[in-house]
Amino acid sequence: MSALLSVLTVYFLYTMSSVPFIVWAGRSAYNGTLASKAPRPWPGALSTISRVLLPLLLIFLYAWNVSGSANSGASSVEAVGASEWMPYQFLLLPPAFGSIAGYAIGFFMGKRTRS
Image (cartoon, rainbow, N blue to C red; front, side, top):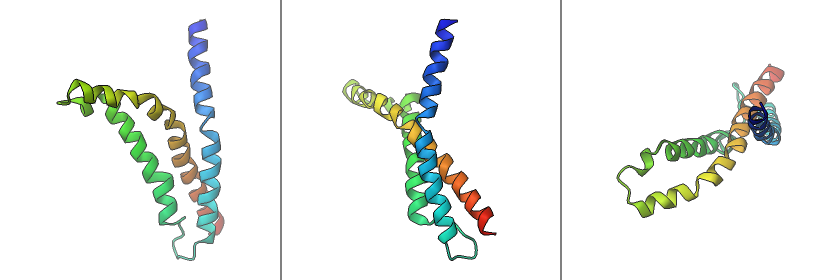
């Protein structure tokens, strides 16, 4: 039971670390959507790239390294170099997921407020 509680605590804290990124990306997308002059409002190209596409790239890079397909055909030296970055990539997942979620929430709230 204590092992389950420990695992749940770790995942709860890991999830809570994405909350600031949800708020930050949400407010930015919301303000960008309200300020948009286009007939179909959206936060803008730079906002979409930095808050959706780059975090998706980080998530796919982490999934690629975890799957092991990135190491197929690589020498042992290259495989060791790829695995050294895994903890850092893991730490980048909460900001990435939070940024994507905040962007979506802010965009839909701004679109609903504007119409």
